[in-house]
Structure formats: structure tokens, C-alpha cells
Image 1 (cartoon, rainbow, N blue to C red):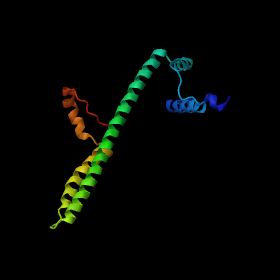
Image 2: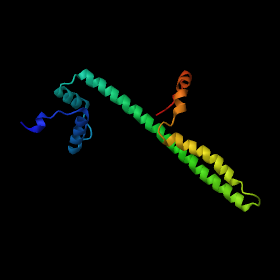
Image 3: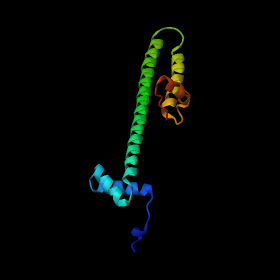
Image 4: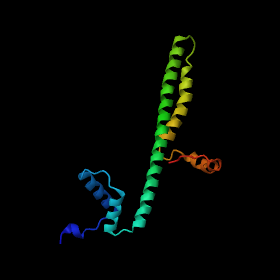
Length: 148
């Protein structure tokens, strides 16, 4: 017997093989009927496949929402960074053009601390620890708190 016919495949291998086969056949999508027919040929119960489709759609939507929220936070940080640079450059020029002691570094320092916390909240793992504490309170008010 052929070695490939005796091999058993795990879920990840099946997923990768089917994705590659679809890519090789230049088909990115299959219809619902084709999916159900393939599942039946493999011996999967159609009701379980329907449940899996619903769960996959729900998970996909949840991931899209999470990525969109992360993207909004990243854009917010970038706006914060640009305003920090522009305003502090203007303060540096003002301080340089006026007589007296140097004072602009205090705004750079103070605002820089806030900017560092904003960076940490957006780009580091475990970033919304305080957000988890807000979930129950926010749920009572009907507000959605996105944490990752």
C-alpha cells in the first residue's frame, strides 16, 4: 500500500492541505453546498457542520472587532506622538527665542511620561489590566470594554 493512504492527518494538517489545494486550483472560495457535500463525503454530520460554520463566523467577527479596536488604539497613539513632537518643538523654539532659563524640558518630561504609558497600553502584552476591572461596571452601564 501507498504510505500516503495509511497516513492519518490531524486538524491542522487537514486545514493546511485544503487551503493549499484551493490555492493551487485558483479557487479562493467554495459554496455552502460544496462545503456540506465535502463534509458529508468525509462522514461529518450536517448539523455539526452548520454549528461549526456559525461558530467560525462568530469567532471571525470577534477577531475582526478586536483587530479594529487595536488599530484605532494604534492610530490614537500615533496622533498623540505627532502632537507631542509638534507642540514640544514649538515650545523648544519659543524657549530658545525668549530670554531666561530653560523650561521646555519640563513639558517634554511630563508629557513624555504620559506618552510612554500610552505606548505601553497600546503595544505591550497584558496591556489592559485595568480594563478587566472595568468590565462588570461597564456592563451594568451597557458599555462594551475591549480588552485583549
